[in-house]
Amino acid sequence: MSHIRLKKALIFPVLILALVLAAGCSGRAEKYNEQGLEYYNSGDYDAAIGAFDEAISINGRNTEYYLNRGFALMAKGNYDAAADSINSALTLRPDSKYVLRAEGILYYYTGKYDEAILCFNRCLNMTENRVDDLGFDVVKYKAAAQISAGYTKEAVDTYTKLINTQTDKAKYYYWRAMAHIRNQDEASAVEDFRNYIYADGGYEAYLYAYNELENSGYPDSARALAAEALSIAGDNASELKYRGIIYYILGDYNNSVTEFQKIEEDEKNAEICIYEGMAFEAMGDLNNASDFYEQAVKKGGSDAVLFYDIALCNMNLGHYDEASYYTERGIQICGEDMKEKMMLLDIICKEYAHKYADAIESVNKYIEMFGSSDDLEHELAFLRTRTE
Image (cartoon, rainbow, N blue to C red; front, side, top):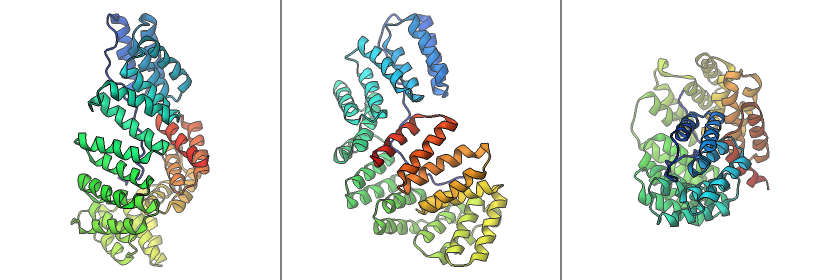
């Protein structure tokens, strides 16, 4: 089932760039390094660390091996060991832009944003601010660190640099809009969300923008932008679904139901049935609402799937407390095959509802059950800044 993905966090997978930092490395060491990179890219970080350890044991003078080992350790959330590995690389090559990048990323993921920005600036100075693969990656991290540190005006300038140098501009317009929101600049945020919508196209972009503006305390701008989406023509199931959602957001429940009812019955999935049920419920027609919720159960396969989909629908409509209520119910009854998915949605619901302490508790429960990741460690760092 395809859903709107509301959260576009300022998080990036740690990219291991191809490095040329040491000459004369042995063939065996390089084979272990290449093996480690394959493990890393497949998400097997323990195996990657083992392979990089073997490479280091054969050739302990190659900076790349220490950096790659550091990134694999960061991916596991083992930042102390990652710092040791990066420090070893720093000892070998204190003037390396790649080492500075790695040091900055480590600072970023451990919440030391000022130190991260300093490293990224030094790295960019060494590249003469060229936005090549290395510079592009560093500028992304720099902007994320600036946002996390509260340097919103500086982040706007950094995102502007990305917009001016990259062909894929949509996501950078989005993030610059978010920086404007943090800077309480509503007009600039709306303008950049429009730039994002025009670059991205389609209903989903409008809904992303609507939710961010609504959640940030700009309901009039949010509703005005959502209303513009109704000018998009379209009559397939997906387009009719989004039109129905937008009418629902605007409080026009009759037109919302009208759009949903244009969809052929055999094209309706659980998600569409839930939205249609919610539209009837908003009009006070509980009999029809109940019928569509029952259809959603039949199409979704289980009550747990229904709870997940109702929670996701409420998230898309900005009803974060209601969404959290359904994720909590779903977690109680769902099987292991769905629990991870339900718990991740629960974290997002609670963050968007500004229940930061509850979100931290949900993250810790998830990590205890399924393990950590870069994204979750960054999420924890963000949530803690909201509870301090």
